[in-house]
Length: 156
Image (cartoon, rainbow, N blue to C red; front, top):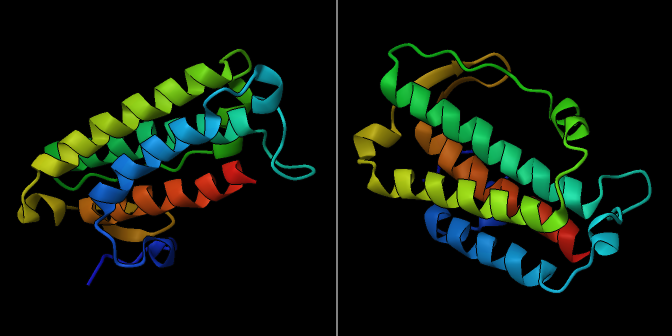
C-alpha cells in the first residue's frame, strides 16, 4: 500500500516516480506558448497566478527534496515548516518560463535521487512539526500528488 498523503487519491495507485516525470511534461505542455500575461493570470479570483503556482511547485521540490536528503544523511533529522505564501511573495521577478525551468530541473533532480533509493532508504524517517513521523517514501508520494493537484489549477 502507498504511503498515505492528502494527495493519494490523485495518484490513483500510480507509481509516484512515473507520475513525477509525466507531471513535468504536463506543465511544459500546458504552458507552451504562454506569454507573460497568461502566466500572470490567476486560476481563480483571489488565487495565485500561474507563475506563482509553478514557482510554488519549484519551492516544494526544493524544500521536500532538501528534507529527503537531510533525512538520508542525518540521523534523527527534524524537518522545519516553511510558509509557502511568504516564499511565493518573495519571488517577484522570476518569469513564467524561468519558473517552469526551475520546477522541471528540481523535479528531475529529486526524481533521479528517488529512483536510485532502495526500499530501506525510502523507509528512512524524520520528524515534522505538523505531520509527526514521516518517511522519504511519504515525500515521494506527496510530491507527485502535489504536482497533480496544481496541474489541475494550471489547466483551468
